[in-house]
Length: 198
Length: 311
Image (cartoon, rainbow over all chains, first blue to last red; front, side):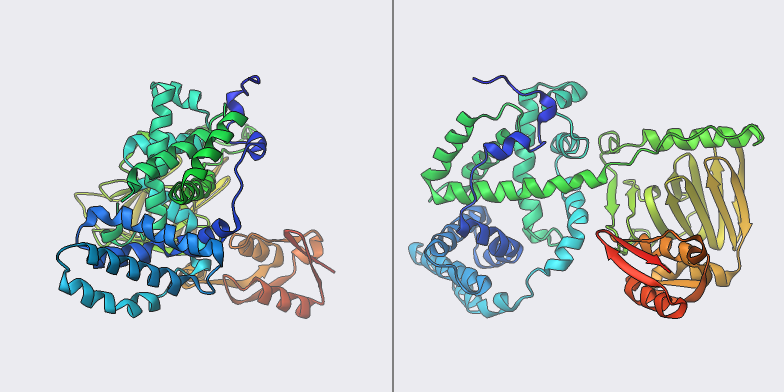
């Protein structure tokens, strides 16, 4: 194996560019058009599904269906497509269950409301990005916040972080993994809505 | 049903691994295999990676360390020199490690051109001007202004004084409305209403009354009087306007530059000293440039990130 690069090279992007995985076209569309809808989508799923512990699975299923369809052909409008997919998925799931909650079906018919809800304003999102990020960081559990602050703001390597916090480097990695997971939920869901907080 | 949670955690672990210094070609191949196993893997990975890449912008929160300063001249008073040293030390020491030392603090930041209002639970209001960063302690009665400008309208509570710290200065509210503006090497505290006390290491506390403006630079601390009219003009940003009154173009340009990524540059000293008045929206740079161009018959040209004003 080639000589291990110095820790200082972490995150410089120089060597990462060479050894990166590609982003398929459909994924590019997905990240741009579908991911910004996550806050509204999660709220819709929560409102229409009783068992809140299923939400992460439901979200994944919606995403898989949307992505598979986009691979064949990109939908013209992301939002109606995503919510129609979500609705169909919920109906199928309810059929699979022995008891169909009646109020859930009634709510599902109010789908139009969800589609008409204002989507994220892209300019506002860009302008508020730093604030959203720092608020998300603020909400992380302390051990996650410490490592991500040192990695992202102070730009320290894992070994430097380990020394600074007096923990093992493998612990730094596992805290960072936890932080990345938590961040993906905090950044995509609407942080002002308590119902969508992870 | 697939276990989305487990897949998401694996995806996060991949993104973490990819950020390590020892990420290799073999790792990449292994990741490709994992991604090829299912669409769920592919989506989870790109979703995690998107968040991680977005977090790169956090580096903007890194406190800028001041450039080394030349020592104050011998003629300045001893106490004042002590103050200057204290300010520089405090700013240099206040890095983002605050996050670690005081995890209960909440951080609020505005981007260039942004204007936000913060309401605290005790009814106090804090308005953040462009490019500002503020930390609020958990008890809501102590804040640190890291950079930029903020206007404070404080619900007075004699038993729990409200304290704003900037470097080694502490502004203690005695029932007030006041504005604090921090620049690279200059601090300005303007008292609009009520009373406040400024505690600074090395000199006696100063009590500010309405119209008082305390200005601290690396070399000196001074107290000035401003009319209510001038103070109101200075606080135009709260209404998203900038008010000029016989203001030199160079000063007006500096003011607009606080709100924009594109910077106005005036090299010609004669042009720099031309004077103009008027009220402009904070995002009205173009409008202001049109006005000065027509009024003084000047030349305005965009070059990359700069807007050059010349004759």
